[in-house]
Length: 277
Length: 256
Image (tube, rainbow over all chains, first blue to last red; front, side):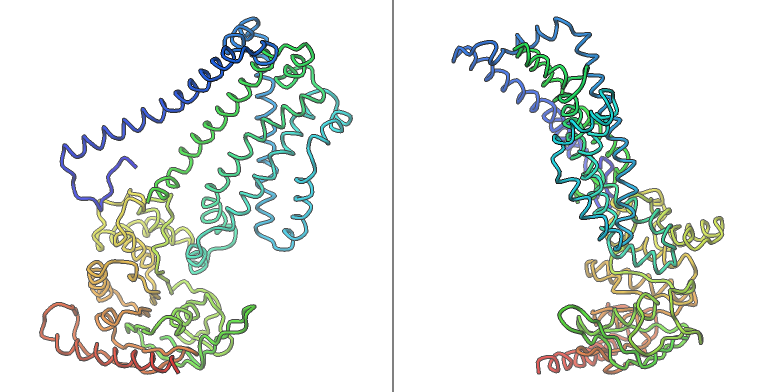
């Protein structure tokens, strides 16, 4: 992106400096604007508590939330870690199941027609309803949480990967054929790399669902994790503590999401440069 | 070299069948440069794909050097309208793709890739990615890739049609130069009369609905040809005019 294309003539120095400056400004803005947005929400939150005289157990102020966190930061961070690990384990397991499954679906019409309705049915079943069953089958440990995460996030990955594997531009398929490439080679050299962009779209959807899955499972039967923390704070009307957990869950989601964006940029740098064209 | 005998191609879709080609006969000599010209829908690309072995005709047969074509052959290479460069591969890696898939000798292929890249003026761009190149340069890379395997037949499906007029002429010139150095039979599909006259030994004018050969026009002008002023400007204009009339005629036929 930053390297000039050969199609361009050599830009003069002042032009280039101006372009560089504009680029830096855009960068600074992309960091400052979201921060400003968050601050704005905090201000409205705080002002409305003061303005409408809202009770603390209904809606705690940002300061209450912060002091609630500072009361026992170590304990809370351990709960966060537990939820984070469950989320990541589930997500990785989901990828390991979904990508090969999608590969089979994309390569065989028969398998697609056989499996797709089943997948849709599984996806349509309300996962919250399954959560207590998972506890019955697997107990209170990590396992039912990981399974719940897998259940919630594997479908978007299957869907995106299937679409991605099918969306190889036709001229590349023709090219592969005309070179006499076998189907494994066509998959490895053409289809799979082209699918990556779509797979990342699926992963970005999946990652926020993964966090939700972990929390749902923790609601039903757990003795640690942020979901457990929320249930506990609800029971004792400790609204501030529940807010701490919610904020931390939001932060987990955001960090995981941008982590994915970063990996995507490193793995498929060409995707963005193509979009820009 | 290439013999096309009684090719019929019918495409059956849910909305009925389309008669794309009807009893097409054509014989192309070794080292000949033939262009297929016609309006869209005359089946010229379909014919090319059948010769490439990418499409099995409803009836009729194509043979190359006496063997019937049933699948893509190693001595035939195909170039498409779009450059079809893999966006994650550098210029030289894209050129080397055919060597990888066809299991050619690595070192030899690498030398040849280097040679082709300098021949097409791409020296110094070996490690660029496709999106960093202009459209004309991308198509040059694509040309290098299709020449890497040293094909005896090169099939080209409107390869320059997405480029601007000047770049198109430039590339047509380069193609002539390269082809004169190698012994390659070329079948070139285009809808541009200029391109046809500039490049071809014989122009096959095709007619639509159903697609068939209307006339074969020999172009007897010494190479290298150019659209600029030369001793043969009059001759080029004459042949262009003739092709133009033939294609106009097919248009009237369509409107009936």
